[in-house]
Amino acid sequence: MLTYGLNAAALSTYHDYLAPDKLSENWACWAITGLAYGLAAFPLVWTGFHLGFILIRAAALAVLICLWSEWISRDWLEEGGRGFLYIATLPLLTIL
Image (cartoon, rainbow, N blue to C red; front, side, top):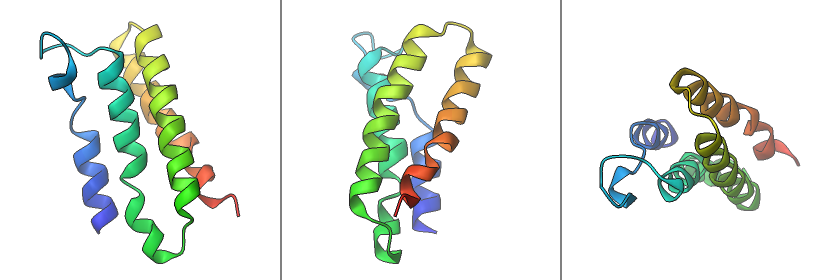
């Protein structure tokens, strides 16, 4: 339940407060958003998941979501791409 709650919180914001105008998103907002998506899985450590893989996924999401959101300008494609990246990186949690 804790991981679910953290995921819901992470998915509910794009961290606009990091942008210079506090309204739009820039690369820092997207990087922190991806990092938050990945770190929301942290409570899984208590169930046997390796912390290293959670951190690797968090770093990968920070980079990938930042790049995707900066390069894509169509909202529907941007949102779908972030969802795809979120799901596509799940196997990083189960490498071992």
